[in-house]
Image (cartoon, rainbow, N blue to C red; front, side, top):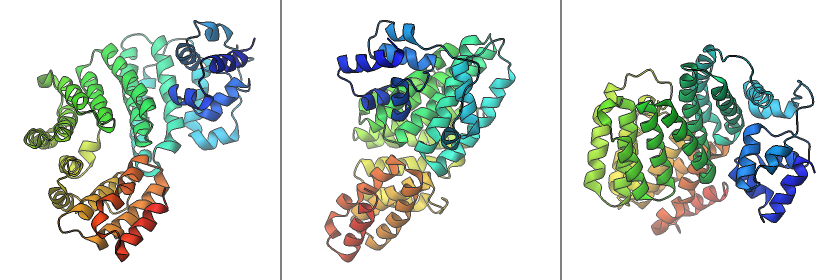
Length: 396
């Protein structure tokens, strides 16, 4: 029996569809289809994950096909979807690594990371996930072969890239896949022994819990991230405090939320670390106030949210890339539901944010826009209300 035949048999026996299995791995459904039909050779990491999920008891591992030769054929479509760097990383991960791991590879991945962050703001998650997944797989393979201290440098990059994947999947509203990568990052952070990385990973688990609607988990993860606060750099403390503020706001504890946001704001000017990851709080104008306005809006305090957004977004870019599009959409929701709504501004903001949604494919931005008609319920029968419904209808 071939690997693909066994995989199909197990899916039938476990009553799990190929699409569902692809979401759990996580893996592109088309890629998994080619593996199941014998047209693709799975990576060792994917085989291990499939064996575990399907409770195969090592049968899939035993049937993993050997590579036919040392040449990996890369199709033009793969190059277009993943980019040259992503394809190369994926190919190397499948071939495996032999010999010592050069410490310069750590610097290579470190230099790539800011470019991925910039691309995320313009492209959104779907176009970037394949490239970052391939590079993350390569990092994880190199970790197994590396000696200390190269291994510790790769573990830091593994945390950073896994967290980026967790974020990309979260932005795509794929919370299960996001959770997988958040947990993988936390495991590597503990292996590294670096308190900055451990707290960073815990803070991101808190961010994931926000989208899962679990305020208790948000508070617990954020508090755990701050447990050894005196050892943490300002940036990690800011991230943990911001998510702590969101957790308190979700429970209706506005005073505790404001105290957390105030503490975070006082630390922004002290961010001076050299870590290449998690720099949104450094590059985003009025970062903590944007988080505060978001928390107010989620708590239903739309008047204060609208006032805060007006102050925050005066310095924000007007290009409606993904992040500013999300902020503007949240502003529109607050303006729509405020005690004195501003329908014309809401419609103008929604139109521009919908364009950004179409360009980036951000499910997070789409969700903010889809919420608009409900917030505009008092005036949705007006001309502006009907126009708003048309705008939202075009993206759903």
